[in-house]
Length: 102
Image (cartoon, rainbow, N blue to C red; front, side):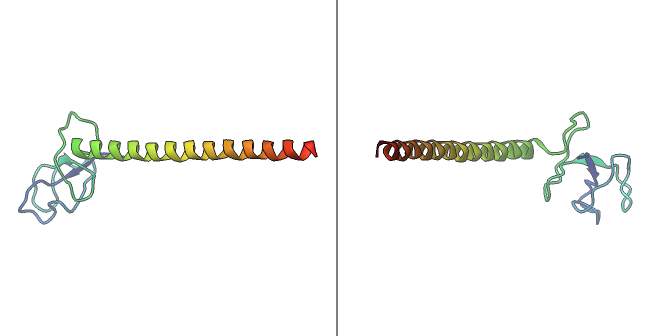
């Protein structure tokens, strides 16, 4: 994903509506110098030029938390599936052993 720019003039029609390319320098409606903005929908917070992220720090942390939660859920499901698989194998061995004794 690429960084985007936006018009930060609150009186402009394009304010918080239009994302511009990195190569664009000025707003086509009001002529205000464009700044890098957060790409998260409805955020549009300004990001300093020296930071190479596409999201503001708030949304970077939010995305990181969501990713960690997804990974935790996957680990829990995976651990439960492994335990269930071990139970099935043990039960199958018991049944198999009991059939051999007859």
